[in-house]
Image (cartoon, rainbow, N blue to C red; front, side):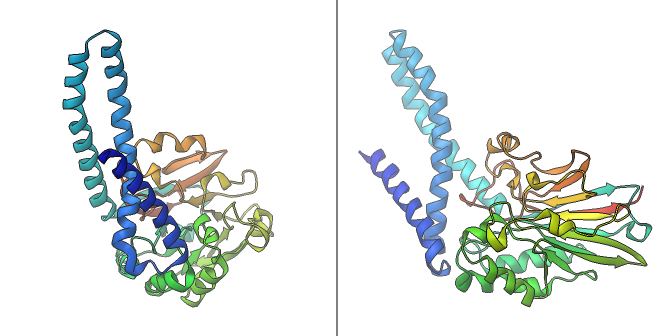
Length: 338
């Protein structure tokens, strides 16, 4: 009976959490929201543990060894619970400690003036539910400490309604990069129903929002094109349009393509480098093994259909406020011409 109360109570709390942050101001509810989302992660690991115990217990039962089965369940059940709680606790701590991952990305087509340029990729901030303005401020400080030439915000910055969560993005105005800050929408901005308001707020904060469009940046005397599209779930004015984003680019242009999801790749269109997020690197073990079923890359630097794709694990969390096997990160790219 107690187990049933825990399961049903946790499920109801999780459902209430998802309704609450989509409709209410999450700030005063954050401890409750954290618990509701954490329950889902704990339930997942308890389920994995039970799946390990169940076949052995069934085998003992079929073998006519009821006492051995009882001993297994008495000893194994608290072990499963203990391990699940420890994993969640460690994952919760890890999720609060975003790090810096650095890559050198080389291309012989990179203009000489861009050799050595530092690009910081920030994705999946997810402020609103379990994090607020202080989290954004912490990420901004971490980004600025990397001395970036350019900052790219590749979507899923928020959860919840703009009138409540929008102010949590305000520290982004303090991002310090001589070539500016560019951004695209992610699926979470669109799912809130407030994507236009969020994108307008980013522009008021000094961010160049790429709504299926491009901007040409110059370092030294050499230009580089940064093109960006909306997330693939967008419709109407928010529908992704790679043709519009890449319109007018020339074969000799070095093109950086920003799209929230790696699978939004457009090959054979002159894109030299794609910057994405969305995957969270799987966020919770073992979902990192399942990401390739949906996306062409999980995290890091890969070449997909001839295009170099950099995918960040992101700095925030979606769903359970934990990370197991996929630590949060900002991604720092140093562009090299050789």
